[in-house]
Amino acid sequence: MTTTRSTGTDPLVQLFGYVPVYCGFTIDAYIVAPVPDHAKVVQCVTDDSDEDSRFYYPPPAHRETSRDGKQWRRKPRSRHVPLLFPMPPTHQIAPADGSTHLNSDTFRNGEGGILIHSLAFLHGARAQFSEWWFDGRIPVESREVCGIPDAQLATVMAFFLHTYRQLIPADRPRLINLLSLRNRIQSYYWAWERFAFSYMVFDALYEMCFRYKMIKQAKHHKDRFASFAQAGLICDCSRCRAHTYTFATLRNQLFHESLWHDAPITGDGPGMADVFLPRLLNVLIAQMMRVPCDYVRHCWSSLSSSALGLKPGAHP
Image (cartoon, rainbow, N blue to C red):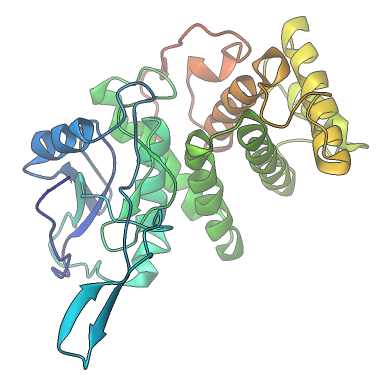
């Protein structure tokens, strides 16, 4: 894969990727837009990806060594799969007034972080600033949470940013990490991995929602799903309740007994638990961000797609 990469030294622009969707918006003090060669970047990555899985895998790497510090040569027997690797940027963030300095870790770990990970979440992608590298495999096509019209993207992102700003400072990194980990779930290989990390994000959502009085405290760990249902935050139909019982059982076996529903650890989960639990997370994240839309009433145990259905005139 060969693409043109910016050094990202312009203090007024922050490059990030990898979001394969051509989209942009302006909210508050920020303008988010695709890079000029977005189509070329996406095509280049797609051409170098696995056609069946629709993921990009980093190529093997080699270590290099120098002799007398003059000539670099490939070190013998150093071929390995890189732990970290760069991806070409697909989008950029610029200040709307042209005066804000964005080239700082304060911005990247703060409002910049919530912007890029929220956008990636909405489009089922993974995001990172251009000079911060990725690990694992990268989805090369949108696996969006729900259908979001282009005209509504700015409004939805405004809700995410507004919710972030309403948190106490200590909770803001938690929200960014939560979104980043949710986006990363699809990059795990095995069903038990996707389920385990989905449950970790679920627990984080529970703690955040309880802390901000959106739900009541559950007496037992397995009752956390019921707490969300009683607060009206998730669907409580019989099919969804059956899935939550399966989730709690799988979680206890996996976390406490190293069992995966009495099957090899490389097997698929029962009832597509590694698929439905992430779908539940999507609804809870939309609820926590207080996005007024029909999607939050969607039956998450259904495989059918759902449109966002943002309420008319909604704004944070």
